[in-house]
Amino acid sequence: MMLLAQTMDIARFIQIFLVQGLAGLFYLVIAYKILKRETKGSNRILSSFYICVGFAVIINVVYAFIFVEEIVYILHVTTYYLLCFPLVFLLVFVLILLKSEEVFTPKLQLILIVVFGVLLVGLWLIPNGVTINESTNWKPDWSWTYLFYSLTVCSLFAIFPTIFLSIKLYRKFEYKELKKKLKYFLIGISSYFFLYFGTSISNTLNDPTFRIIWSLLSLPMLVSLYFVYFGVAKNL
Image (cartoon, rainbow, N blue to C red; front, side):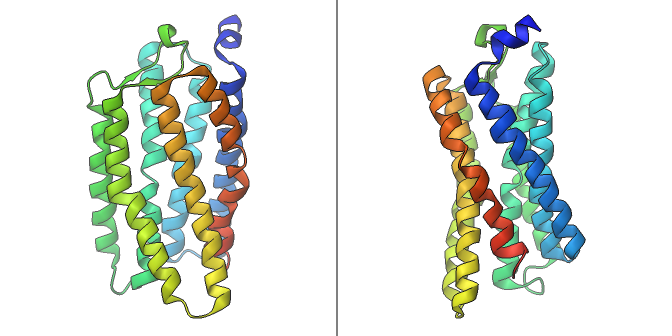
């Protein structure tokens, strides 16, 4: 218990239990609502996004209480993998809205998801990419190589295409009401991208002051994340 108190500073408490903990519960509830409403292909894809992140957060909260280096390393990388992997579901979801499932078939969706998942396996293969043990006060300390690989894969193969196609979809809509709803969706996914970039940079810098600042900056994103559901899954 004393070791837990020493490692659980205010920044980490805010980041894990407030930001990520509350967001995780939020995601699981929203996934349930989406699937309960209708189980069509686009709903399954979007609910998969929420489910992945929800499980990632649960794992992250669990390993905050573990102080065995090998186990913590595995759980940390698993958590980060599950936070990166859902990015492809946002891309697939936007492609379905833009092209329809008749054009962007379930087979093509699966191929895109698998390719992205395989690329993310590299997160496990980078030598000395992540250090998390007693010497880092049980906080993740990433190498710049690890950060660069993550940002390259996630940005080029998921984030940038999702933003580009979402803007294209927005321009395609003619009705003001649909445009308004898609604006909420864009705010929501931008919030998630913001959390992804901020958390990745924070783990690489491993600076106590930056961690505190980032923890406070990420709190307002909890509200914005609801807009993914409010803008699209709930209305379109």
